Image 1 (cartoon, rainbow, N blue to C red):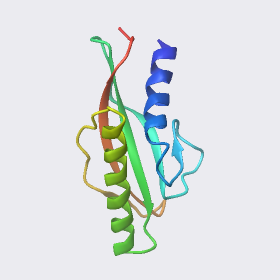
Image 2: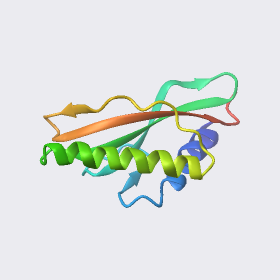
Image 3: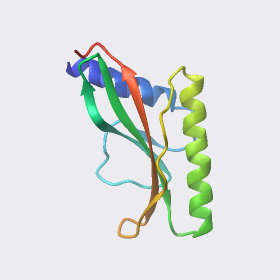
Length: 117
């Protein structure tokens, strides 16, 4: 099962490789925005051979309105790159502000068919 889950994350990361920001296929020790991080979604593994991943876009908050503009641009680029790679993104949640980390983030879920059972 591990190989299938790793392959799913790797495929999504490859689809996002054209973005002009770092794309992490696993949680880094610290996020330096702008960046994209792939995280397990919920439900993570479904018995029908699919997994859910969260594609999380991060932008810095130090610019006020610029933070949201940067986040919006990044989310649009993520969605376009996924569609271009033949991967259908799901819904994108509203932006969340994390003052402690100094970031604003938005999560896009996606369900990917795998060999997981």
